[in-house]
Structure formats: C-alpha cells, structure tokens
Length: 384
Image 1 (cartoon, rainbow, N blue to C red):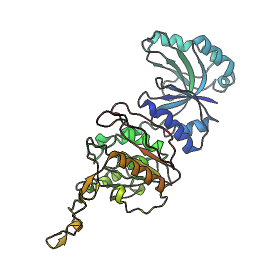
Image 2 (cartoon, rainbow, N blue to C red):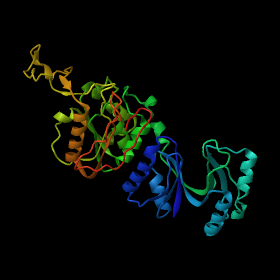
Image 3 (cartoon, one colour):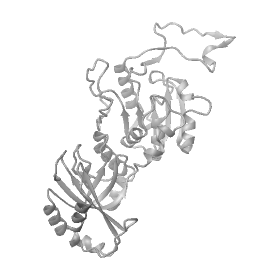
Image 4 (cartoon, one colour):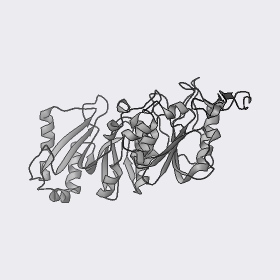
C-alpha cells in the first residue's frame, strides 16, 4: 500500500536517512517511490497501516503520514486515479465525520478557490457530518508548486493516518534547559542524530565528547541507556545544581542515565570489548574549541606534584595537562574506537566540518571494519 509522508522542509539531506533508519529500527520494509530534496512530499510503499503508524511515530523531520488515494500531474489525472483505485475505500468511510484540508507547498489559493477544489471531490460520496474539530477522518489535498509557478506540478489526495514525534523538539528546547554551553547541540539535531543511530530501549549509547549532555539526553528520550565522557571535567561537573545530571533530572530520565567520566579517547579507561549499540558524538573542530588530548607537549612533567602535602592530581580542582591534537588523528581514533567497541550492526554517528579553516574540503573518513550508511549535510554551518 502506498503512503505519503508530509516532511518538514528543513535539514533536507537528513530526511530520507531518518526514514530508512526508522524502518531498520522497527524492522519494517519500506520502498521509497518518490523523494526529492526540494519537496516536502515523500511517497513510500509499506505493508499496511500499522507499519505506517510505527514508522512515523518517532520521526522528527516529518509532520505526519497519509494513506495515498491518488497522485497526478493535473487534477483531471488525480480524479481519474482516485475514482479507479479507491472506490471501495470511499464506501468504508462513507458515514464517518470528516474534514478536508489543503496543503499547498510554494503556492496558495484564496478561500473560494479552496472550496471549489474541495467540492470537486464530491463524487467520493461521503454522507457523514463535516466536523472541523476531531473528525473521524481527515483528508488532505496536497499541491506541489515549482517556485513562483501559478499552477502545481503535482497533486495528491491522502487520508490522515498518524502524526510524528516532532512536537518533542520544544520539550528539549535549549532555551528551557538548566545546563547548556555555547557548544550544546540543538535539540532538533540531537534527536535526529539519535534516530539515525537507532537509539531504543535495551541499548547502551556512548558520547565520548559529552559536554553538557545533549546527545545522551536525546538518546535516552528514545529509551536508550546513556553514558558519556569528556576531557574537560569542568564541563561534566558543571556548577552547583547545574550539570549533566541536573539535565537528566529535568527531563525525568535518570533511570536511563548510566554515568559520566573524565577521559579522552587516547586514554580511555574502557576495556577493548563490544559494549555499545551506538556511539554518537560532535567532537571539537578546533575553531571554537582547540583540539587537545591528555599529556604534556614535551613528554615531561610526569613526576608527581605535591601541593600542601597532597598530590595535585588527587585534588578536586586539578586540571590535567593537555597537548595539541590534530583533527585527522582524532577522526582516526574515533573510527578505531568504534570498530572495537560497537556491537554487531551498531552505529556511529559523527558530526564533522565539511571543510577546514583554509576552506579545503574534507573527505568522509572511512574504516575497513565500518560501512558508511548515510552522509547528511547541514549547509548553514558546513557541518556533517
């Protein structure tokens, strides 16, 4: 059966990847019949309505999913397809209360034109009452216009099935979060990344650059148990009652919070074993934050320093020495760590710049033990 997903027209290169990831997560076979980055309408083929509801239920980059009753380049073509292929469906809903909506992308119609358009579907034979609020069935006429075109290039008719999880973005809005920093990941992108990495109940997810905890919180929203680490202990500890733990408490997610610890990937205390179902991270790029790892520049300074008779490294305010770290070395270390630490079919989601400070395009890192599933680009700040 064919369905129309009404996508949002933001983060376009992430949308198809999210649909495919959610299908993998729910073990649903999905066939994408029509998808274009410049259009918010995606046509897919699914087994049944239950699969459609499951697929859309945790989507961030869509508004909802509709049972597709017909599509065409013109309304004449659309009407013909609806009459030929959905007559039995019309009879099934003939006595239900209903309403019609019009969704015109890059186009518009005045109220009288909208009424005439809706009336053109009177052959559907709906005898139930029209209810604008909480009807039994909702139908939508979709119009897809080219930019500044006077007529749509494609039209669809769909029956509403279910909505997405997009409203949750506001729940995790950074403006309402107790503890954030200048590098905290936007809640929408964090949730999308958690979807791409297949966060779900019964899974353990790890962020080796945890910062203020945006990614672990997004993963835990979807049911995963989250663990994080960071080279900067001040970021993990926060101040007084504002820290990563307070963020988990704010969203009642403490039952899905495992722990945080201070470390970097070159000095991790984790054993070499397949622990994680997902690794999700936004490492520093060296622009806003310098790239560093634990250690001294010249290899000296390893002797124990005492302050007031106590070893300095045991004191609460101790900040360990750090040395410069190249971006390319960091990428290699992340991929090596993922290859050793991910379970079979586990996923790594890694954000990285598309170009360096000299505007030289960076290639997508690869590893012989890892397969690239998708590459998504956020054009605004040149990050992948």
